[in-house]
Length: 630
Figure (cartoon, rainbow, N blue to C red):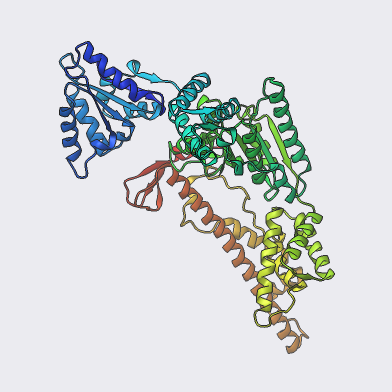
């Protein structure tokens, strides 16, 4: 069996061993020639239909008696041109004793095995996984040997301190995706030599120093100083300082390093969670605990797929992007909601114990109550988070301090009355649900500038000012939006809608307004009718002694009363209809997540399920209940 898989990361010696493999087969007389023909996947791909097969046949003939090496062969794993190439290889390479050719497929292990699994079944028989050569990444000791060998090869000297710095950097790079191994060593030394040559021009020998390997501009001051611009960060800074101190002491004393673990950030929007995540990444990078100073920012909703099987792929994509750094998942409580959210949570839990992602630090963030609910609902997920940071909301004085700083920075004159009015507005805003802390304060500031522009566009100011009217207009819209609705206008419709409570036919988009509206309207009529009005309606006329003027006034009052009731009825029906349409839209979206219709047709209820407008796609009620039961 001459055909083999060579699996491993770059720089592990696959190409070198392929050459030795050819010489060995020639020596053992398995091949008539034994030379190595190096090709990449792109060399087999044609530009028009049929060209890929023709080029593949020609290359196989050219490789008779030789070893044909196809580097990065996983790029042939597609449904069109690459598939045609693989089908020809399966047809022409039979793995028999009479074959005067050896084909080697080189590439990363995971995509190569996926190609064997998904493509022509004969491919796995031609290239059995159990007979593959697996090239492991080099160990730190092996990398050090390669480092010294490469320095000697390039005739450069390297101090002991410089070697230590280089090895620390290589150890960090090993945690990243597709580590280059020997190639990474060669690149590092070549880059360092270029920097050193600028320092020692004219010298006979180049000597590498620690700063030749480290970018001095990348080393900044204390990253915790970035938190000085944020408010109520005392406890967070203390926790980060303790974390850093623990690692620094362990490193200086040569003891076992504490476990970094994963983090939970609990707090409202605008309290600095994302900023702290970035600061934490810098601290961990400076301590050598992560390979790169990078934060991959996403949300719980972004990690949830749109159809079956898509969620796991999305989670893996985010983890790959965060490899060697920090994965920050904001609004993480969306994980576990619905079928796709549950799939995302399961994939995340599995990945956090996968050695492939061992170098990734995961931070989940969100509202305190929602985060605790999510973690308490999944013991496996909660056990993987060992550090909890709580972010308190801003106080009114924090809002005022930020505003004062911005006013001074942009040279605005602000009267004390404006400050007093703004302080009362911040007090009111903080008491309402959904307070966004720094985000809301920044939004009000921007809105005040817009209001001021409208005020001074026709009459420019020599001295820039912010007035009480600017404050009132900027704050009014936000306060009105945040205040709860008037109790008298609320309907009896439930606040939380479950699409699987009751009959499915109740949720069609074209259904009539619910009877709830009529009931409320009738109850409202009963509540506003007085005994005198009931008596009056039964009498069907005016009482004796009532003047025309009094009767006209009474008729006008009746008319106004009827108009008010009619207006209330329309408002109630419109609100109920809006809620019903929202329910229908939500249900349509859930159906599309299970079975997206390519033509984008609406879905209609038929029998025990739903069918798209074109008629070719169907989703049963049972599927809906199983996919979206919570």
